[in-house]
Amino acid sequence: QVQLVESGGGLVQAGGSLRLSCAASGSIFSINTMAWYRQAPGKQRELVAAITRGGYTNYADSVKGRFTISRDNAKNTVYLQMNSLKPEDTAVYYCNAEIITGITGRDYWGQGTQVTVSS
Image: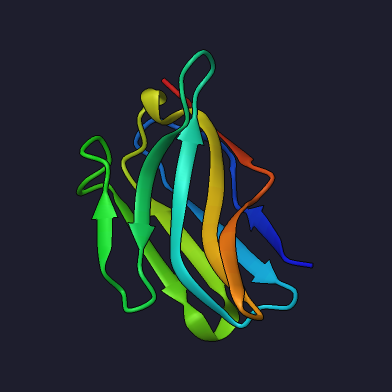
């Protein structure tokens, strides 16, 4: 069974920083794209940033230049460094990964971690 466990959320003042981590565990053969999504109250879940196994990244326009996604393939872990945080970054952040187990692969989701940015 595969699990994604997130950590690093919390309360921070505007302009501050947080670093989220997400570790995958279980019967994993390999992991393709890993990503962070977020969902604010009353809004749809949106992609924040994604990174391929080879390190290619893409970001939502709203976080470009402030957030950095990275991964450690040896640890099956993805990170999201969030700087210059704004109140509009407040949301539940979810880790997502395309994980290959045996001969099949599918998307897995973490349980979510709350990020609250106060003004």
